[in-house]
Image (cartoon, rainbow, N blue to C red; front, side, top):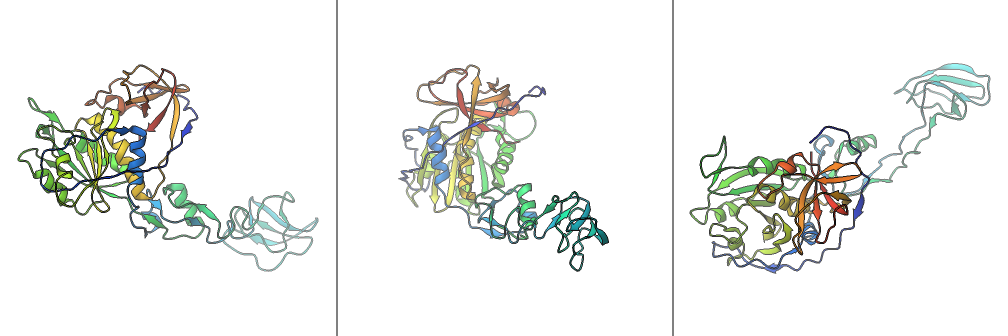
Length: 407
């Protein structure tokens, strides 16, 4: 997209409704014909159901260096006052009482000046050095002393559980004495890509298409807070290979399956999840959105999840943001982030009762719909800044929720 500077509008927030999932028990097994999908849920409801379905993964303690990108499993609290002692906020002289003052010595950062200053005495002091006992100010008088605990008293909560650990939080944790915070690790995600028509390198041959999801999904999983484990390509024929591949990924929290979520002759996922056996719990079975509506989320075994995405690349991207992102957030113990709403301009074909997901780029005080967002075409998403969830009945220029695209 163009490199001209734009002003990012200040968003308002869309409140997230409280989930009340009504699961439908089914069972896994071999692969019978797929049952017709259930009536679709709304796009907003699908996000809530996906987020509320899992229990968070177990917490563990890791070093600060290993905590980046993970999620706090418990409140981060100050282990000591911040600052821990009265400290100079500037270079100068720490003085006691009214002047004039006699210089008694000097104190530098990292050292402690012994003794107590009496009235009419001072020491030269460096920024960050402990202020000697008895000092009332660092010149100019009455200012430039940071008192112990003025930023945070010992024991106060600095960040709540569920906060994603970023660079600033790492520094904050270190500054108050933490070495190994309790965090929830990234949920482990495996990817199964179906489709006998896919080529995986170079230009595709006649009647074939290049696999776009193999490169796309691991990067997206990482950006959404998951740990991409491996990508496996599964043939449509002979039938039964998908079931074997899904059951073979026992070491992951989430299995993502692409291209087998509809009810066509080669679409095996719904039949697999609905077969006789352990009893898969279907959390979301189709969503009232375009593209990506045949997406699904199921729990075939306790605390193990299957996310079904369409095979078309842009449709799969939309479905991943709709179900996989909220699921990962729920597994990581993070809240479902509210979505900013901004005015959106441009034209999009309305579908009654259906949310349209289109790529947008920042445009002044709002956003404009980008070109190139067919179900199989990633151009608009690749150069845009967000996905706009255009609700039924939207009028051009009206505010809509945005899913900001990860960098």
